[in-house]
Structures are given as C-alpha cells and as structure tokens.
Amino acid sequence: MFSANIGRFQVRFAQSKADVAAAQALRFRCFRQGRTTPGLDQDEFDSRCQHVLISKLGSTTPVCCFRLLKLETAKDIATSYAAQFYDLANFQKNAAPAVEMGRFCMLPGLADPDVLRIAWGVLARYIDENRVKTLFGCSSFAGTNAGNYDQAFALLNRKYLGDAHLRPQQKAPEVIAFGPTQERFDLRRATKNLPPLLRSYLAVGGWVSDHAVVDRDLDTMHVFTGLAIDAIPPKRAEMLRAVLDKPAAEQPT
Image (cartoon, rainbow, N blue to C red; front, side, top):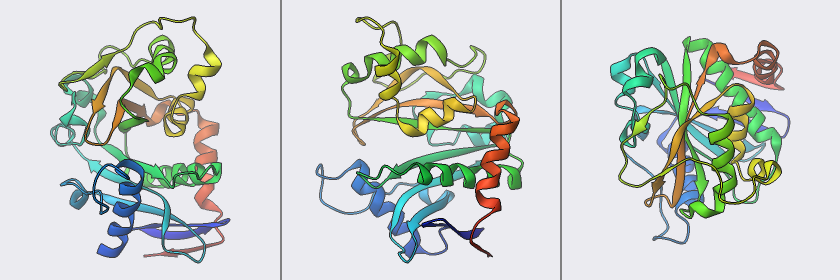
C-alpha cells in the first residue's frame, strides 16, 4: 500500500473506515444522487476490496475513487461483482490471477485528464506487484435509455468485441444485445459517447462483451470489459508505470 503526491493530486489506498466511507459518499453522489435519501453507496463487496482514493492536495475528500478485488483462481472469479450479471464460464478459464476494478467514478463536473492518468498509474503498479494476468470490470454508461448510446454500442460491436472463447454469455434479466445502428454510423459521435474509462481500456488493448446489462439499481447500463495485461503495448505500459515512478513524495505503508 502507498500514498503519493502527483502534481495537484494525492492518491492513496484506504487505510480506515473513514477512508472507505469517503469513497462510498462519492459513489453515492455519482450513482444515486437525487434518486434516494442521501447516504453511502455500499454493498457486500466493499469488505473484500481495496479502495483507492484520489483527492486534491491538502484535502482528504476524494474527487475520484475505485475499488480493486484480487481474484487468484477461476473459482474466485466466479464470485466477482461482474459474475452477478454475466456468465463468466468462458472467461474465467484462462483469466486468473485477475483483478476486478469496480465502482470507478469521478466528481461530477470534473474534467481533468490527469485524474484518469493517475488511476491507470495505480493500476499499473498494482498489476506489477500482484503479478496480475487479467484486468476486468463493468464499464458504466449513465442512464438506462439504450437509444442514447446506439452509435457507441454499434462501435463496440464493430471493433471491440472480445474473442468468442473469452466473451461472457448473457445472464442478467435485462440486456441490450449489440448490433448495427439503425442510423448512419457516425464514428465521431460513437467515440464521444464512450465513457472515459472505457475509452482508456480500449486504447490499451481492452475488449468488451457483445451486450450491455441494464442496472436499474444504479441507473446505468454496463458492459463487461476485459484486458489481458500482456496485450498492452510495451510503450504504453512503460508510460503507465512512469506515472507513479516520479511522484513528488511517496510514503510506503
């Protein structure tokens, strides 16, 4: 575990219940604000995960957070968050040891590319230290109106589907199968409608399932996203590692 100051931000792993609660408060604001009584976004997976918080220097309130669940075996992958929504029988055969990244969110209105860069730097460090073979998670699209993302889903279907022997099968009660768009395909619009985290997954060799799951609880649609670590281009992997190699200050814990 570590904490580090990087530019205008501090990144740290949660070390206390207060840290976890701070992450859960940001998650609530991002996923549940306005739909229920203010509180925390929490579930049974939180106790199994390591939580990462990114905050502005001088503040402990996170502007970005996510959680990591280390899964050593195929059997462990079957107990992941994603396994609730996707049939992972094909995927888990060759994915372990893996880490599932979940509940990634940034403060609404924050548009700072350094935050996402720092998050990937943390992932690179964690993957190296834990000798992870596969990174995966559920990439979320805001809302449950599939029509808003027709172009984006068509792009994923055209270019980014995982190999058939890896792709999860349908399991959730409400899914959106990918296919061609009903309108003229617009690459610019399609790319713009991809969530930033998903775009960054795809930029380093990630792939997706052939369908999205409608999650009424979080008011999102999410797509299973996988990344074989050895598929990351070497130069890009080197850049990601360098994010945390040159922090202003680092305190091992």
